[in-house]
Image 1 (tube, rainbow, N blue to C red):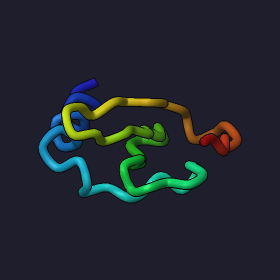
Image 2: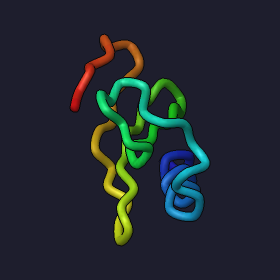
Image 3: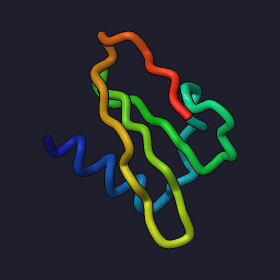
Length: 66
């Protein structure tokens, strides 16, 4: 659990440090993606917020979304 909270703090401090979400169709760069211990975190960066959109285990098939 501590690793997850540490990751969320890193995302809050450096939202663009992680890669663009490869499963997002028509990504304008505001949709980001990071992998931690086989968990995929997908999030969106806006002017005011960072929104966690999805957390998935890596064993599942990737979902393409727009």
